[in-house]
Length: 257
Ligand code: PEP
Image (cartoon, rainbow, N blue to C red; front, side, top):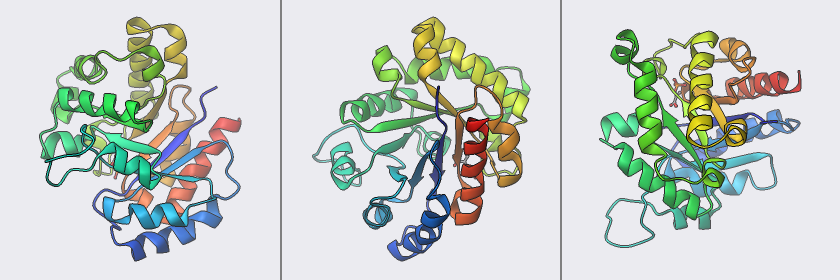
């Protein structure tokens, strides 16, 4: 049984320790009784330390939004997985579409980061997803397959089993347009088939595939009811304790049904 994972990707918001702390002080008591859902918040680097301090001894884990694949050295402005690990981060988001599209991250770079993250015992959340014009021209599955092949290139099945894949159709991110549960489920099934054919059936059953793209308390229930949707990566709605909690609760209810 795959238990759901809800990741709150704060993007470049709430990066001051005081703002992050205020939000988390509201979230901690709300989620205290949640048992079946892995809860991860990913604040900007500048709020990681305070976040890790405040969630200590709670059921909230902390992730970073990015990292570089080297351990140390002359890489001005970059953050090493070792730093994140040492700080107490458990997760790292890799290959978010904003990193791919705004900062020109390639599948090859993401693959290097992914291998390093696994090597450093960080749990990677790796994002894949198609642009609107790719969907409209009927190329969604080709795009997903290509990203899958290159991003997860040369990974062993034990390694892939530790990865959470976030299927995030780019046209649904921050736009208020959510994929329908059926559209999302179709691609989640397709990704699971790719895992089964490239690795094996057992690995395909283990890997968690979360959906991302304008998840809100009002649509979370229907999405999480789908058999192959193992929670979500949440941007906008993760900035407010109450809406994030409602999404986490929807994941808990869907799991326990
Ligand atoms: C995201 O940033 O991964 C995301 C899905 O954002 P939003 O929920 O705002 O669409």
